[in-house]
Length: 214
Image (cartoon, rainbow, N blue to C red; front, side, top):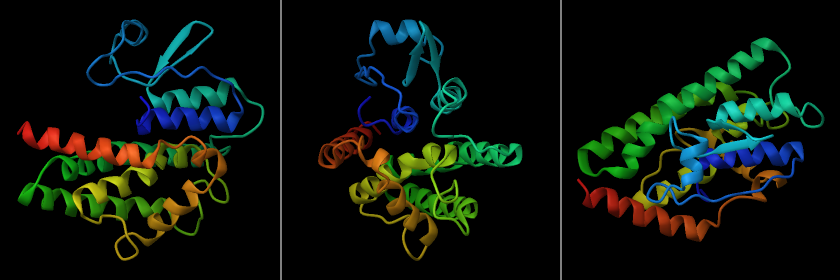
């Protein structure tokens, strides 16, 4: 799906490795194709990578598969076992602890939204611990953790603009704020970012839908 941060993770990994691929867009969540349901009958979600006729689901799993299958060129996973474990830990932390508060900020109003904002600011501040003393989560260059968290750099400012609330700024999370800029300036990353105006328009429309459904 053209605006999915989870799909972007996989595209970034493929681009870093210099792998040519065919991109198939899905109309998520309303009109999932028969092909998607056949390739991923378990979760019925994107992204799905199909290689040698074999489908693979879940973006973080796919990133590791790409790095292990195409060993030449850019190394996505850290070489040291401890660093790999730490990268996986923080990627899981971001998915488990950061995504839901961000969604609640986006999809609620009033007291519920304010509570979600406070929670989001707290977890993003915690996420900064993995960035201390570094330009990227991978150090001097981007790696697995940067790709795992990278969609925040693009999507979070759009959500902030949609709801008129700041969550990651120079006061609350200055390291993460700086990383947003550094990450989005990497040529491979910015070369396939979704159109911002189109994404903002979709974000506002989606928020209105969620609020009206309450």
